[in-house]
Length: 204
Image (tube, rainbow, N blue to C red):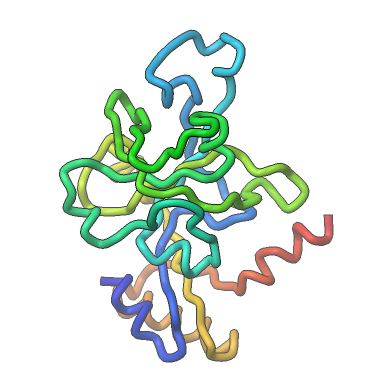
C-alpha cells in the first residue's frame, strides 16, 4: 500500500522501500563461506561477511544505482517459486571471477537462489571506505531463504521510504510524511534529503 502511495506523490519519478540507507545504516550480513555452499570458514579466501539488505523493485532507479548485467527486480518476482537476488560487482568478482553471474545460483540458508542481475557498487560503509561485497533481496510478504528469520518481532522493525522527485525538497518531504501517515498515522518519521544524509560523511 505504501509503495503505491509513494509513487503517486506529485513530482515523484521513482520510489522504493528498504531497511537501511547508504552510506550509513547497518545492513544484515552472512558469512561469505555460507554463500559458497559450505567449507572451512578459516580457509584462505572464505573469510569475512557479505552484507545484504531488502529493497523493493524501484530501489535501484530511485538511488541511481546502475544495473551492470541482467535485470533489476520486478513485481512478478514476488510471486515466483524461486527467490531472485541481485549482487553487486564486488561480490560478483569475488564469487564468480570472470564468469557471468546472471543465471547462477547463490546459496542462502541452504537454498540455491537465482541471481538475475549485477548492480554497481555502493560505498555503504562511508565514502572513504572501499565497497563491500553485498547482495539484495526483494522485500515481500513471503518467507524466503534470506528472510525466514526476519519476521516480526525480529525483522522489518524499521523501514526507509525513498522518493526521487522533481519537486522542491521541503515540499517533497512534507508530501512523503503525509503519504506515510495516511498508511499508518502513529508511526514515527525522521525525514531528510540524501544530501543531508551524505553531509556528515563528507565532513569526516
